[in-house]
Length: 343
Image (cartoon, rainbow, N blue to C red):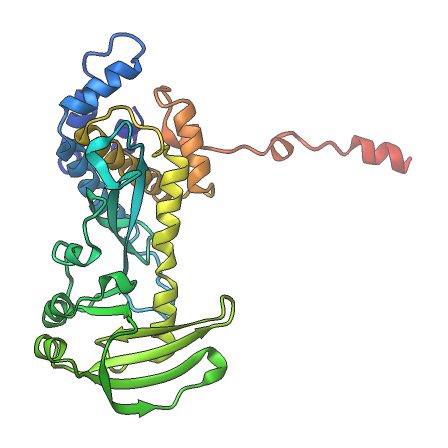
């Protein structure tokens, strides 16, 4: 019902697959669904349906937030790439064996720095290397991609450079380089160095012969130094450091969906069931973001999710369902008491 109300004013052509999957998911439930019913449904219905719904919603959220102003110091198009483990019970999900006493699947996400919404996601086994996910990330010429050191892979980053994409990645200690140019920096801002370097190790230099930029920053809060590498040679070093700080938005996204969308309890034990539920959680997050933007709601995403989850099948428009009334403002104010006091 909420899904249908959300798309009432929009074109139904792009979301036809969403409506079909929503009807198919509830088909056959003539009474209160049990855990066994949900487990059977998640095992039988292909997770790719939910992934397709999520991709449609990602496009719609991106269009809805396209006019939202970006921070002045940041580039126009920027993304944060990160991954997070969704913990499972090894006794219940033996197929997701990750370590000797742990089980999990890994959720890879590319998050927009403008809307703080995912624009691409992928669910893999827990041991899938982050570096390999670089082969699947959709690239945009002129866009910025911010990553942690787990994504440092020069052959893959060289392909990104050739595609016209800019990256900011945390460096590893063993990277061998030679300084070509050293620029002055304002150390009061936390910057320590701004250098143009060339890779010196044969394998790295062969796949990435172009110059790289090495920026070292100091975080006074955690008392640590970070070294960043980027293929953009002219953007101010302070902006590069700010871009890397914005990568934390991806961590907040993972924390939000795990806490508020119950990714600790699964209705089904099969790999398909787990993927269905993970993709459903992403769809729920995108739907809440879309509702907040289209209706101009002041509530937080968590507050909107709580309201909708309490009454998902109410025959009310979303604007009316999510409207908050102020009881003090709605009650007429009487001046009689003031007049009596004055008398």
